[in-house]
Length: 97
Image 1 (cartoon, rainbow, N blue to C red):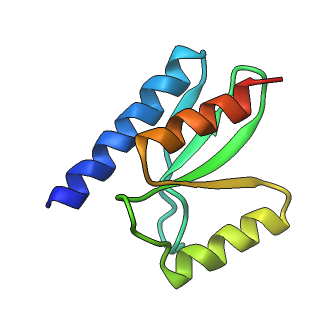
Image 2: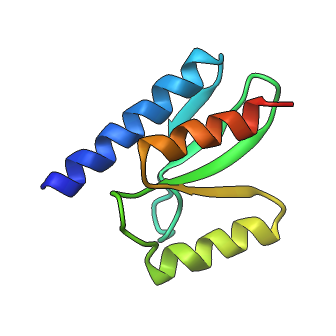
Image 3: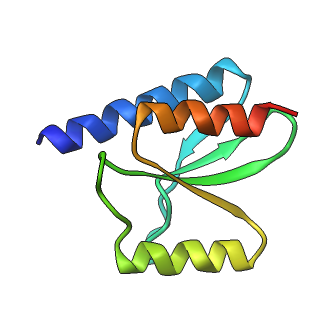
């Protein structure tokens, strides 16, 4: 339960950070398709990122690895975030230019 709560805290930080910059971090579900990332981040300037959130130290499942590879092959950016610090790094990466 502790790891689940931790992942939820990281997810909330991501949503709040993206919203503060005028973007959206939408929950992503795709019935019938396994391994899709947790969130689609849409920036206010039209960029799209797929984000998988994990509890600290947890890793992608084989199906998540496969789906991330498919999305990247299609030209989309996929990030895995497992800490509050990585939320900050992600935000710095996508909003520094």
